[in-house]
Amino acid sequence: DMIRDHLEDSYRLLADMERWGVVFVKDGDGNGKIKRLAGRGKYGVITFFSTQLMDALRQAAQAAGVQQVNRVHVTDLLSREGRVLGAAGFHTRSGDWYMFEAKSTIIATGSTWYKGICPGQRDTSGDGFGMALRAGAELTGNDNDMTANAMPARIDAGPGMNKFVGEGGIFVNRHGERFMENYNPTLKERSGLGLLTAFFAIEAKLGNTPIYLDLRKLGRDSMDRLHQVIPLPMRMFESVGAIQNGRFVDRIEWSSAAPVGRPGIWVERDMRTSLPGLWACGEAATAAAVVTGLAAAGTSGDRAGRDAASYARSADSLRPDPEQ
Image (cartoon, rainbow, N blue to C red; front, side, top):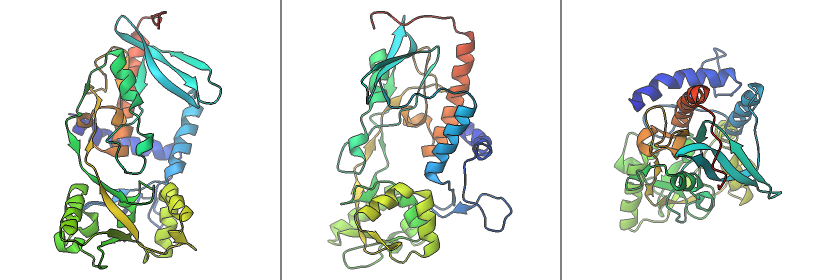
């Protein structure tokens, strides 16, 4: 049911996002059609300009009258009689405490995973899961490993491999040999993450490591597109000299990352948790309920928001426990 919901809701959400001003990569012939670009897997992917998406959604929310409170680190949920009634936290600069009372509360704090050597691991705290668990919500799925991943081995720049291989990046072993075509002649570097890491392991067992991602042959159009679509990792590579004068100047050592055991908050079909007044969406919800990445963050968030709004319209008023 949740897969069906995602597939049925996704195009409507895509149209909404475009109407709100999100810029997608489109065909160059002026017909206004969104262009699918090569990425991991057999089928092309819809691509947006990353930071611009956040700006557009923020402006759309402000235009709708949403109050946004920034730089507040939420630490716990407020509750009474087993019902969630908001959240509390502190301002990260002033230290002032904030208390948000609400009939409906949605956790959209993302996921957490194994804290190994992979880039970004210092930022994965699991605070959303912690506050849900302390309030009495049910968590699930931590026993299920998600697919392993692969990232730069010595540069703290995690995201972007999907786009790097889609634009023509190739993996080579220590001898400079492009080995992926030996294992998967059709998709090669665009193989799924599980296959990719398995092939890396075979090369390691053959003594062919280190493995490198070679992006030196990318042309100007590809480099411009990467700067637009994934500007943050591109800036990271520039900061360490991997990109100079608009081109990659050296191969980048790449490594498998550990399999990810990703927990999540148990949810029903409309993203309700086991606690009245609390919803979870995106990767804050259990992996079994969220089909894939950002697209499902959108559809699950949309579904959670609609159901939370309906609940709030009919719920009676109740103040949080004063002892909290």
